[in-house]
Length: 248
Image 1: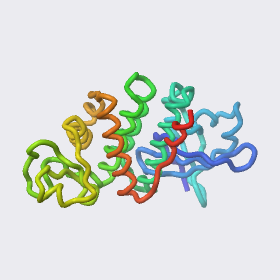
Image 2: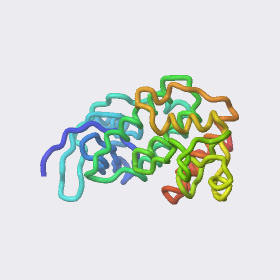
Image 3: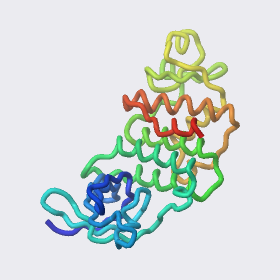
């Protein structure tokens, strides 16, 4: 038992009774932590602001017998711009869904946490397309988790393409357009040059340069088909939060 001081972002909350909640925090020092926020649902509670999903805060947590409890939390970034926009909030929920699939207790992932915070900043503070921000997050997050596709050259022959690359979901990377390579892979889909370059950039670019590019609507749609399918097949589950956007 004792106290833990750490920074983290609330990625999930579950109500427990009229006033309390259990929050899941993606922390810088400990990875995933579940904590009891006593009175966190009360608007006037000192824990209310920091116990909300999306709040990035400095937490003081008390380690009890069964789980942590929130002793105090000072909000660093509430991401209000996301909370007040239904489309952005839906994308943020999608990001949280992915993060919850990737993080573990007592396994810090500072690169993934930095990616999440940078992604939410781009969503909240800039006019960059939310769909492009989402594609970037999806592919980079799963790459950080150990599922980075091989996109330097053709996985089969090691050469560049005569025209365009294809993306193989079986081999998890690029195949050139020669018959012996992409022609033999039924899972592969042909990519435009713009989509190929975007996938390479997202996979390998330094974090500070990750979001510096834009795409035409057609190439963005193509990129989204690749990142969503790759995410689904690598993690073996559907991510359905964005389905809500089809109804509005």
